[in-house]
Amino acid sequence: MLVSKKSDNMTQLSSKKLEALKELSKIGIKLSDGYDYILKEYALPETTLADARKRLSSIKTSVAKEIIEERNR
Image (cartoon, rainbow, N blue to C red):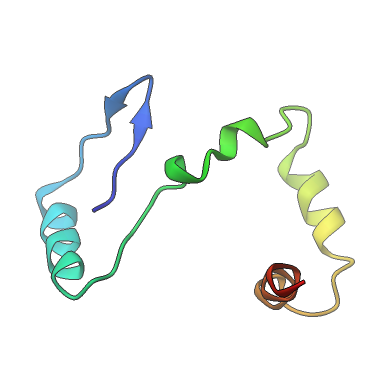
């Protein structure tokens, strides 16, 4: 199930989202808002969206393909 921890509080989800999450959970799909990946520890506050786009634009293939290749190394 999708869980978000912002200041140790669960984010309120709409009933429509909760129902969709319940259905996805039944078929074994796990969703995450990224909290469980500890992304905040790796985030660089001085990096802007424009900076990220500029750096990512140098990748000639899809970002997904790059991530998969990195995982396989």
